[in-house]
Image (cartoon, rainbow, N blue to C red; front, side):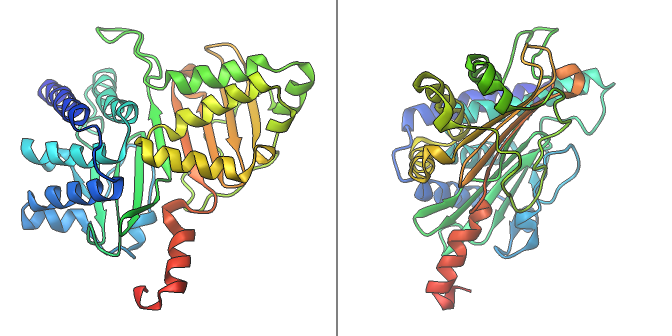
Length: 342
């Protein structure tokens, strides 16, 4: 396992350096397709059988974030070169910050391996790559998924149709012992949410806080279709300008997982739907170390943060598109306009 950890760290350093040098020079859909093609080309026929699925396969929407076996090809069954190309594919869709979070989440499995008497299910290389359809074709997509990580991307031609569901989680949320003590991979998601909550006055809190006990899990779970949750909570229109800036910071942290051109498009969609349709909910305690939950949702999106397990040191943070998870809405429009694409 130590060699696995060293390999993950080495790959992170190399790929981050490459990404910094390239600085995402080409359109996202083009880079994603090129990266997927290069990755597929490096594989043996047996490996490609595990990686590739028909775009209409039910497996494309069979997402989850628990530590169990999945379909797809795990990093554990790849050569060093293949692992590099798999992570280049992941990097093609994410921002530098998002990529750092993703691969660091993978590395936390080493800590759980050590804490749980070397349980074989805790392995930084049990992260699976799946490709749906033909990269660069009419419609295709890919998923990188394992414990506490599920990243799903859907592409049509030169357009990225969807970047959700997008799930990041950490256990431990804060590493408290060993050489990595102090590491908080999802620190911003926690701190920004708390800063917004702490800025609310008594009247605003009475609307935003729905219960003093946080739920044990994100409410939307791993549902294949996202939907609006009730109660809605405090509307952004009832916030002061500084509070709305704090709310915006929370939203940008979630969508900022993806490379800038993708996150800019996501922000434009959210803003176009209107601030008067964005709501904030809080549950549980406010102080660090207390179980807490918050969500931000608008007409088109849902973001949830939950930290209750492991004595409030275990974070789940999910971003869903209420209309267009897995590109469903835009694909429906595409098929209606282009019947032959069905």
